[in-house]
Amino acid sequence: MSGKITPILMSGGAGTRLWPLSRLAKPKQFHRLGGAQTLIQATALRVTGEMFNPPIVVCAAAHADLTRDQLAQVGITPRALIAEPAPRNTAAASVAAAAVAAEIDPEGVFLLLHADNLVSDVPAMHRAVEAGRAAAEAGEVVIFSLKPTGPETIYGYIRAGAGEGLVRKVAQFVEKPDLATAKRFVADPDYGWNAGMFMFGAAAFLAECRKLAPAISAAAEAGVAKAARRGDLIALSPDFLTAPSEAIDTAIMEKTAHASVVGADIGWSDVGNWNALWEGSAQDGARNVADGDVVLVDSSRNLARTDGPVVVLAGVEDLVVVVENGVVLVTRREATASVRAAVDALKAKGRGELL
View 1 (cartoon, rainbow, N blue to C red):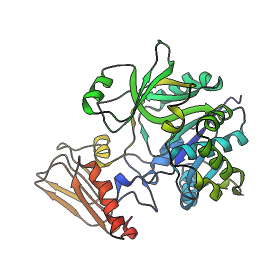
View 2: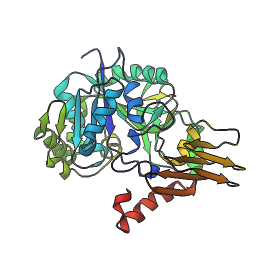
View 3: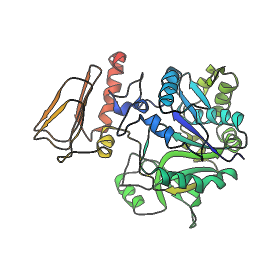
View 4: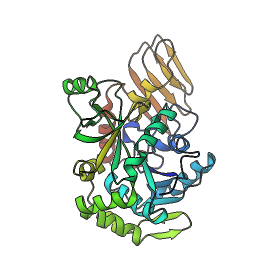
């Protein structure tokens, strides 16, 4: 095996719960949310250094140039840029990435990460990765179980099996629980959040995919085999689009007998909605978060951001007000499902130009 780990950055998400900032032309991973870099830049930078090779990146075909440009701004050149003709969920994307990974470094270890998350404790993340390396080299698919900060019902959970070491077999995957169940999980150190972070040897992972999700594997691998290649760009063929749309968790991880888990406390957030962004951002004395030309009067616990026009909030609480590229969103901060519903409503009204 090579001495370095190769990151695989999954950058195909749409981030619709952060609309109107996150749009089809420029999803959330290409925006700065709570830091000096965009999310994809920050993700790539946290897997640089002596421990890592340059990354393989999976993105939408329409975002290939934007991806390359944003990474170049922080001095990173991908080993390969895999362009999806259209999204087919994380299982197909993972198989395509693993197939390319097997070409690049057949004996290597690969770390699969979402490109649109935040991590505040990078050294802790590196320690967790190093702890799981031997299991990945031995043929396990390693998943990282992240320490919950509260009883969230929007995440899946992982239960570690019996044992006391840093690396344990996965005992159970649990889909998004109700609040009472989430509270019980948070109180039990065997449970952690499933953040979709995986580490594996490419050959072992592909073998499991071919066995457990043969239709997905066949389509994704054909997409790679027949891809149009130009320099670092691997444009997947239309064969990729025949893959069933399924998450890696349900297609592979919940079925494999070769899943191990590493518990980690790395200060993770998926920045999945406006409330999560408010929670993870610097707040003023009234717990407001403001970005752009924003005036706040007698208001508290709001998030307001604007790309130009002045936004004034007076005498209000717990709101999100976003002005972005000619669109104004006003919603309650914790009404996270309503934003996605608004996006669906705009689609139904034929207002795709706003998405």
